[in-house]
Each structure stands twice: as structure tokens, then as C-alpha cells.
Image 1 (cartoon, rainbow, N blue to C red):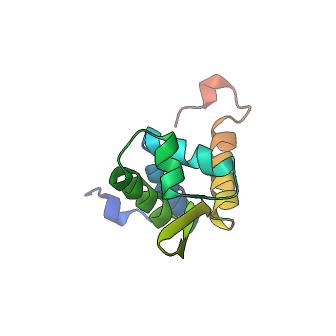
Image 2 (tube, rainbow, N blue to C red):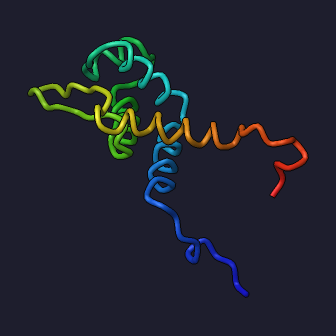
Length: 114
């Protein structure tokens, strides 16, 4: 029997959790989320004032976070204002909580292996 990832069916929550986790896979994106969670919203320039990277680099990281649904951007020409996505941020927290709580069940350590 051939085993491939294409033959595995994933739930919508598993796919969304994987997308969130992938978006969190760089320390700069973690910094961006921390900054956004500490205030209602901010502009790209505000982020470049706090993170010593080029604006284009920050913008690339913002795109990854936005594509994953963790943040949203509102165009206020000539700037873009970013904030945490109010619909998906709690969903991300819930999915990660479920993952971590599931993996730390009070099962006996010897029973934790597949």
C-alpha cells in the first residue's frame, strides 16, 4: 500500500491550525503580532520604528500574516493600518489551546505513545 499525504483527509480546523502555525514560523512575525496585540492597530511605519528591518521586509511578513488570516489591513491612503483579525485571532487561540491541551492530557506517560 502506498502512503502519501494526498490520501490523508484533514479537518478544516487542522488545515487552519497548520496555516496559523506556518505564519508564526518566523520570529519577526511573532514580534509583529506582539506589537499589534499591545495596541488597537498600527501602520507599517510604526512597525519599522520598532523592528529594525526594511519596510519591504516588514511588508512581506505582514502579507504572510494577512494571508493566514491572523491580521487585517485597512487602506487609508497612502498608508495601510494593520490590526489583529478580530474573527480569526480568537479562533487561532482556541485551536492552539485545543492542540496543547489535547497533547497534555493526564494520561500515564507510558500510555502516550501511539
